[in-house]
Length: 117
Length: 109
Image (cartoon, one colour):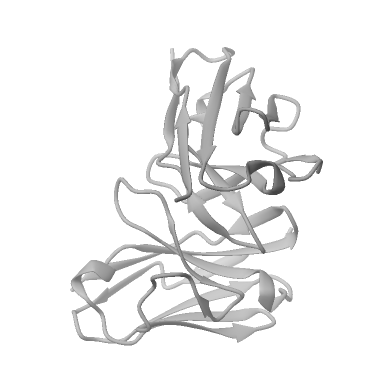
């Protein structure tokens, strides 16, 4: 059974940093593109960043480029999102999702990031 | 960047009725890259339809998708109480980057 479990969210001040983790199980993690999607309170879904499987590259939304860094540790089946220079508009639920054939068939339960002083 | 516009913003219907949700793209989208998701309060989105018209595993056959080019539709043939939720369309114009529509809220009339 495929499972994705995010952690690392919390309250952080503007300008601060946070690292999110997504622990994966039930599939060959290294083969799959993995993605972070966020959802601000009461708003829609926004693609944030992806890390290609099988040695693929990294991709970022313009809204986070230069501030966020996606990484993965295939030996630990874990995806990360290092978030620096956080802003109030980064406040959202952050989901990790498995990308397969142009859709996200599996999602984690999300981890909430709140940026506020 | 391709923009997806969903309509209506809110759809008020009763159980047993038919729901038709629209997703219009700002330019032509590959049919293989158009998907639909359902999201209930406090839950992660759930994949319903991929490749425009293919139901994901475990999705009831009252859900169907259609369309091509710039116009896509999600149809729920007979609404069940558990279908009232927010629905999003998604497309990949330059995978793995994607965009989502703003969502249609399907509410109980």
